[in-house]
Length: 290
Ligand SMILES: *[C@@H]1O[C@H](CO)[C@@H](O)[C@H](O)[C@H]1NC(C)=O
Ligand SMILES: *[C@@H]1O[C@H](CO)[C@@H](O)[C@H](O)[C@H]1NC(C)=O
Ligand SMILES: [Zn+2]
Figure 1 (cartoon, rainbow, N blue to C red):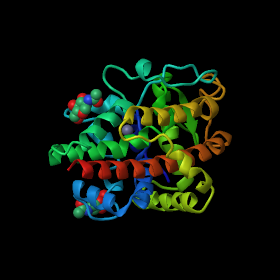
Figure 2: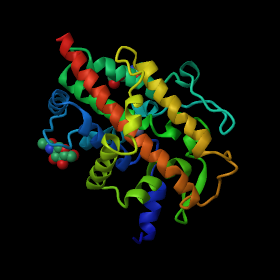
Figure 3: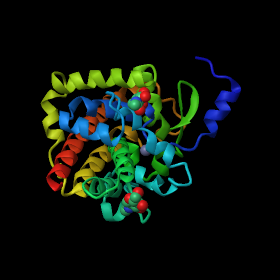
Figure 4: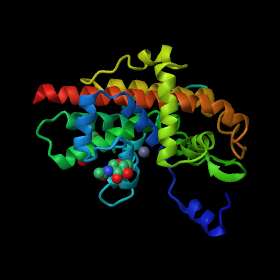
């Protein structure tokens, strides 16, 4: 594909990204829709006003557009938790230290889960809370959403296929898109199908049950903090194994890409599988309230 000079300038002017790209989020959503039970599916199709099989994937990136609107600016810090650790020698997330006054992804998952469980929540806020949960469970599984260093890698300049970009963007988009060969909704659905098979009968089958350990609807902070902690550990092992100095200015589409792919596949699969269970718990939890 050839980009015109104008297109490249346009891309360079986009705001720093803080989320899996659309491919990652939509894939997480499709994996989740492959695992939720039928009551959950009907429940969220109703809340999201969409009866198609894309009812989750279709809203998976809404939160990334909303944050750039005046009405949605308050939600910008909800997409990450800035772990003030010291990769690569020491990784770790602490809620009290790392969740800022403006909020963070762990607090947001708690907030919008609690809202969804309130039987008196109005339809508009219920719709918004659902869209936030679908998005944030994806974000928290991206290692650089659980890292403070250089604004989650947004300020670490690197190249990918000889094009200048930053480390955060490489994890959000360049690596997934190179792996799948596109970023359309259909690409996401295809990737999700492959991950779903891996969970049901393939490499992830022996692991999938353990991914749900510790999930507690009554304690969304501990639940999601464990996910953040798990993803953050990849910052030390795979994202920045040689520290910032070891990566700055480097070309990442070769060996670095090869090492990152298994982590990205695993994290997207985990996020989708956990999102399915979380939505199941919310739907069942609300039913007992009503
Ligand atoms: C449901 O979502 C899909 C994916 O975004 C979209 O193509 C479709 O038009 C939506 N359907 C309705 C009724 O909104
Ligand atoms: C909880 O959600 C509401 C509604 O979106 C928002 O105004 C508030 O800032 C959120 N609080 C936290 C702690 O995330
Ligand atoms: Zn996001």
